[in-house]
Each structure stands twice: as structure tokens, then as C-alpha cells.
Length: 244
Image (cartoon, rainbow, N blue to C red):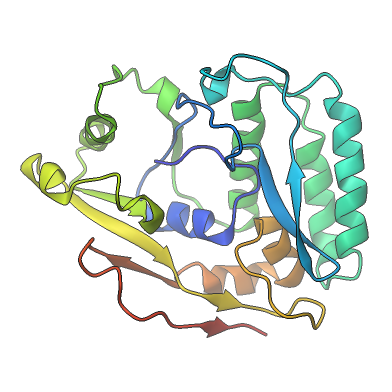
């Protein structure tokens, strides 16, 4: 289970592809300055932050209770211009730009639904067929302990393993999961490099960057390049996958 993120990095799609079922945590609290409504693209050899502007509202609202700003249409047209300027010479610009135009012009103003649509469409583009569900549709009473919420979701599918990004390793207790019959494992994307206009490689950018520089077949080849480990094993040496 992950929050719906704006054009997330490659590892997010690797995690979807690795899972039997992927749950979008659309009913989790929106975190300001997180990655729900912003990400980074490559511009002139450097990472450039791009953001979905949101309608002003209470900070304690869930992601699926937030709306994009009233100026969203104009903001998205400016974002499209920025993306075109940054990637017009990328090898797969002509294939990817029409997809981005459709996604950014999607006529829904709910933040969670807008991002969910883009995630589903990119999965379809990459031929990732993992079932994707919304946490808000699962009718699960929210426990006080976030670990117990995850366990309830896993048990809903009669699952016996939960896969979480390694960045959340401090949030979960493997022994607590084991007592409920669930093996806790952590996902870690392999360091991956690919050609970016002959600049020094800038990693962990939005999936937009990956798609602009790699064909669908090559991205599919990259999807399995990750490791799965326990909390004890996660410090093993990294390996780099060079592309192109």
C-alpha cells in the first residue's frame, strides 16, 4: 500500500509490478511538502521540482478530500510547456508527450482521483497488470496503530506477506507482523543509470524522465531490478544497472 503520488519514480512502478495486489492509500492524510502533488524532472542537466497547486484547505484532510486549485487548467498548460522545453530532444519525446498531455488534461479536480488515473494509465502503457484498489473502498475501520491498518488490509486478501519500500523500515515491526502471520519484507530499487543528454546522471526523478529516455521494452526490463530483504538484510552492498 502506498499513497498516490504525482508521476512517481521508477521504484513505485517496480513495487506495483512486484505485488499481487496494490492498494492506493487515498484515504491517508495529505502531507504537505511530501511527494503526493509534486515531483522532479530533468531540466538543463539538473533536477527541477514541479508541483500540482492545490486549493487552500485544512491540513488535516485526507488525500481524497483535497482538490486542485481553481487555476489548475492554466497551471497544467504551463507545466506542459515546461516538460516540452526540458525533453523535446529526448529520444522518446514523440511517444510520451501525447500520453502526458492526456493525463494532465484529465478533467477531474479531486487530487486522489486525478493521480490515480495517471498511475493506472502509466501502468497500462508499461503493460503492468497488477490489480490496483483504493484504500477508501475497502471499508476498513481505521485502527490507532498504522501497522494494524496494514495488517487488516493484508488479511482482507488472505495475504501472508507485506512488501514496503525500504524507506519505511523504521515504521514497521517485523515481530508484530509475524505474530499476525504476515512476513514483513522491504523493497529496494537497484541503483539504475541511463543516458540523459550526456549530462552526469541524475537519479530518482519522476517516471516522466524514465519514459522520455527509455522505450517501453527497456523500462519493462528495468522493472525486476530491485531487491527484497528483511530489516536485518537491508544494508547489503548495492549494485548498479547501467542502461543504454
